[in-house]
Amino acid sequence: MRHVVITKHGPPEVLRIAEVPDPVPRYGDVRIAVGAAGVNFADVMARLGLYPDAPPPPCVVGYEVAGVVDAVGPGVTPFQVGDRVVALTRFGGYATSVVTPAATVFRTPASVSDVDSAALPVNYLTAFVALYQCANVAPGETVLVHGAGGGVGIAATQLAKLRGATVIGTASAPKLEALRTLGVDHPVDRVADVAREVRALTAGRGVDVVLDPIGGKSFRTSYALLAPLGRLIMYGASSIASGERCNLWRIVRTMMAMPSFRPLSLMNQNRIVAGVNLGHLWDETERLRHGMEWLLAELSAGRIRPLVARAFPLADAAAAHRYLQSRASVGKVILTT
Figure 1: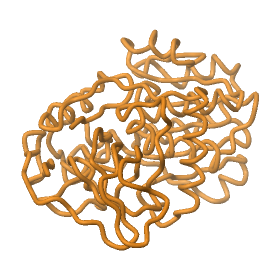
Figure 2: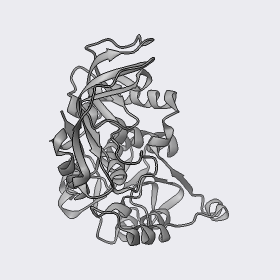
Figure 3: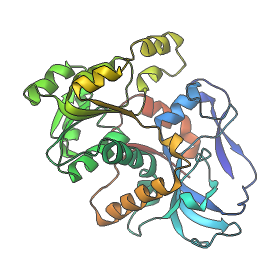
């Protein structure tokens, strides 16, 4: 098999393709011949050395794949060789072959391609947990989605609209028209005075839910925009990884700009703050299965649809990382084998 290795921390060029023996499924495992794998910002942070959960280099990252089962380990009954599947992987996804527990594998709807199904797990599960389980977004509420042109942002917009919410989405100016076509009710230029724009759109009340993957001072601004009983859901800190190399000054500056949330202030202002890290929910198997099964049913019914910005061959993983970090993409970045 071939896989992409982070040989050391650094710019995209540290990603190198390598040949290794095929993995062998053990008890309860499924082996998948990978057709497509998702690229996530966590992978970029792992490459930069900013993701503490990632294995030390040399390592292979990747949290989600889609393809065909080509071997099953002892004790596996739900899947057979030849089944088309999509799966969550605890790293190792940047490869032509992946072994993962059967509990994290799901059948792909017949009408959905490997590329589209590989765009589902991480982005849509993150949005599902944030919006439905943490924020419990309700009809008529207003949701502010930062980075609305990214994979999680698009997923969050679709899920918020399914609940009957109004969506305000931030993105760079060239993406704003695309956001309208994706269901965002009020696109806002992220370099504008976002707080002023949001207050104008909500007649000064603020928003009921904010999804913020940016970190630093953005968390502070998002918190200030909450209406009574508003919920701030933080799920990333992308502002610490805006360059192709690790920048210690940027990290320190971002961390120092993070707000502190005091219990008495939260009570007095009737505000809720929560964080989501999907990688730290790995052992919540039933919770993740419930979310994936619901999302796959919605995908099969056509009520949600991942948007793939661009697919790169596995050997071009460095170009995929560079494209994702450019913030030019609208939708998910995928690697194909």
